[in-house]
Length: 175
Image: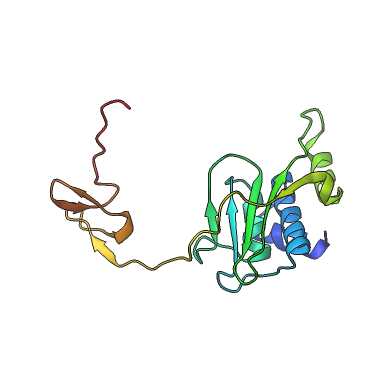
């Protein structure tokens, strides 16, 4: 792990923390094992299984972002990240196997994360799913109730009117 990568991630995230250290090391592993760098468009895709601090490192160091459509959230709560290279077809899932002993102080845990061998920190496997489709641009549709526009794929039909997710009244009979 280079000091330059760490400093770039810290500048983006706003502070040092163990969670960011996980993300930096994930990026290092992805760069090394997949021979990738910054994603200028959507050629590198990351599916993160958590919404923790490490995701900021993915954005800062690999340029996978929600806005570009190459950073997707799959909320399993695991410290796991799947990477897909659209150009080569390579794919890799990186899972944090190292668990923090709660008796180890935070600074020591962060230091360990930043310096331990990658194979000691992570388990590597192929993702169990294909890469997500490329991002699409949908037309904006105006909600017939509130008058606000939203992406066509997020709109709902209710009582014969096209409504946004905020105006849509969910119907459930208990299951």
